[in-house]
Image 1 (cartoon, rainbow, N blue to C red):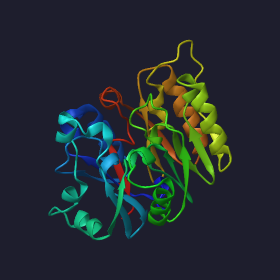
Image 2 (cartoon, rainbow, N blue to C red):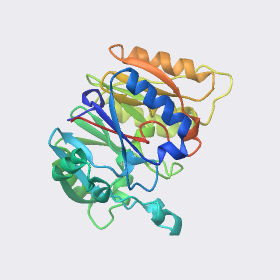
Image 3 (cartoon, rainbow, N blue to C red):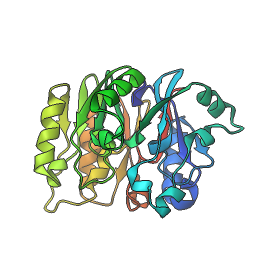
Image 4 (cartoon, rainbow, N blue to C red):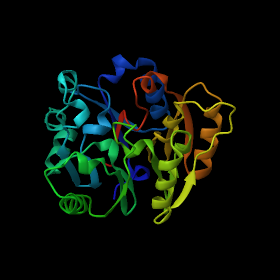
Length: 280
């Protein structure tokens, strides 16, 4: 399984330079500083390339899926629904090579609902809602065959309409997983998440000691890791320093850097959402 620590290249939507120019400059400056290769994807219709780009399982194996989520089926959503096949079939030789390594599956998936954790993929069970034409057993079988590993399903909190697991957990390596401070939003779902995750991982919960809990504190878990470089969203809050310290402690072998993130977070996503990191 190609997890974040094994990636060495990261792509962003070309729209990021226009929609989040300050954020784009901060991120690319840091990538250049640490010698991380990056590029831009043409033909995308929004900045959230994590959601629609194929999922890399092995160096020469990518999983292509149907990106037709229910939240993009209105008139506006259909206009910003990207077809990753069209993005990959460009004049860029590297992207063409990835296209040839893709295997398609007959499932509706969001890339933001796929968190690769060693020999496990963590998803919310919204995937079953998005694929009602198939039984739960059939969906599970297709996912296991495609990802070549077990799938751990977390319950979908329908207050979070996207149903993405990358706003809940992030893999910390060697059987460890970071869990966001979901108890601030729902103690019921937090406890369910923790119980399910602890059956498989050492769970490291993120905690913030502040007088007031901020609604955007979910964004810290949505950091970007490329190899040993970790870019953590910074929101101009007192939680910023605490998030950096906790993630640094969980990833002692990594260089953990804070990057101002409000340009993206105000639009509803953070660093994992805007990126597509792979191993070339």
